[in-house]
Structure formats: structure tokens, C-alpha cells
Image (cartoon, rainbow, N blue to C red):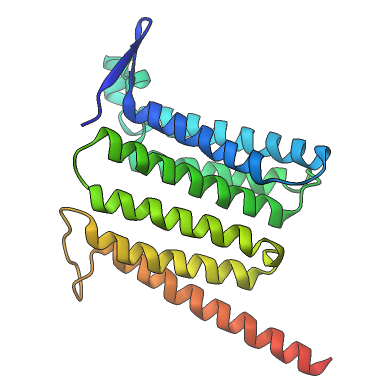
Length: 230
């Protein structure tokens, strides 16, 4: 169970502290693995720093959006609670909008930004799951396998880095990640089967994997047709 730590007059939930540590780990992974000139690295770091700060603030303070009455009654609850899963989705949307607006003005290759986001996200997720294993007593198998999955895809990202300027490679990577999530979700407890022994989350991941497979094959076929025409 998550506890809280006292920092001066404020209480900081361990879950929030774990998120901060995980984000820092993601940044360290990006900084360590990026091998570009100083200008590109600086532009990438600035872009990602602003995106992470925006996402964190939206996730943290979206609690007021979903629980306005409680915040009005007790404003300090805004410091203690976060937006949870709904806040995370809202934060992801805000970051996507930010990227779509800023990438037009930044001289950073889109494939490099995508690689950095994927690398940082996997490193941060792996660290968060590790902290969960250390601080909680439940869901051990699920967390450990998420860590293994993150490590495997981090290695894959580094080995396929030169091919990541092709969308088909990203589609295949995302497809296998979705398939991995279908498997890992079997270890979520409690798990309620919605259809064919799969939970609703597994069905979503399975549907995403099928869609990504379809798009990947279509792109490969179109690429082959264009090559034949040439």
C-alpha cells in the first residue's frame, strides 16, 4: 500500500514520488542514449522537458476537473491527490497537442522525437513497475513481467534505431507491444473476463494489434507496388 512522506508542511504521496522518480529515469535514459550534436540534443531536451512538465501538471491538477466539489471544500486535496487514470489520458492528449504545435517550429527530426518519447516512456514505465514491486505487496508477477517487457522493447528500439524513420517499423513495434500487453494482462488480479476469456483491457490491446498488423501489411504491400513501378 502506498504511504505518504512529510516534506515541510506538505504530504507527498509515494505514488506521486514514484512518478517523479520514473520521469527522471526516462530523461536519464534519453540523455544517455541520444548521440546527436549539441544543438539537436538541446532542442530535443527542451521539447521533451516542456512536454513532461505539461503532462505532469495536467495529470496532477486534473483532479480539480473531476472532483471540483471536493477541491472547493478542501483546497489542500489538490496537492495530495492526482487525476488518476482519467487525468493520465487527459495529460497524454495535452502532450500530443503540444507536440503537434511545437514540432512545426523545432528543427528536430520527427523520428528522433518519436524514438526519444518511446525510450523515455519505456524506461519510466519500467522504473515505476520496479518501485511498485518494492513498495507494494500485490501484483508481483504482473509488475515483474512489465519490467521484462519494457527492457525487451528498449533493446529492440536501440537495435532498430536506424530503421525507425520508416512508419512500418513503428507499426510492427507497437503491434508486438500490444500483443505483449495482452499476455501480461493475464496476471492482473482480479481479472474479469469479458469475451473469450479475455478482459476488456486485453480485448482493446488485441484489437489494436490487429489494426496495426493490417496497417503494416498494407504499407508493405504499397511499398512493394511502388518499387515494381520504378
